[in-house]
Image 1 (tube, helix red, strand yellow):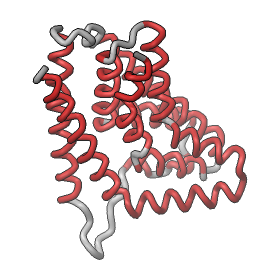
Image 2: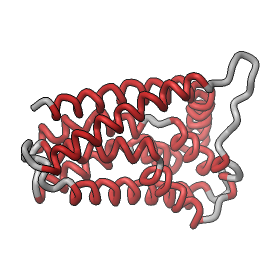
Image 3: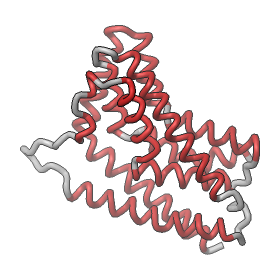
Image 4: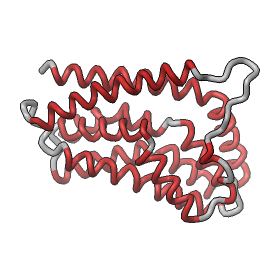
Length: 225
């Protein structure tokens, strides 16, 4: 059951990990005056947000492993709606992309990240992982898939922990690289940040469309059982 659960949630976990803005944010925080402290706090907030969201969904859909249950039907309808919403968001994001010669406006939360307080770094990590609409949908879908795969008790806890670890791998990797790599790591991370800033629209649109289609398909498949 555990292997099936991990396989079911893997695409969503990777989509969360590859989100451009959290990676841009953590690199900006790490480059600040208190980068080491704030980077660790951001990572703690990020992991906490994902864990709390996944736990709440697991409790809410605890009976979804029974295809005939109300929880399973709600989860499937939720996937249909969430998958459609992700596709719409992807199309909207592409339609609103900066045209040639235009400069993309950075999100407000990126302002002054280099001198963020400890509390703000912790809160920002939690909000970007647990309260971000796209991550919320992906985390809910991944956790529902874990429950539907039949994972219970220890297996459920392990599967959720694996999801959180995979979804956090880029943030944790950036923090670990900064702590261990010195100036060379800082230069590499800044190159990653610039790549993400330049290509954030394309990356975000691809993630939204591909995962939206996957989530929608899973929901329709579940409703057809």
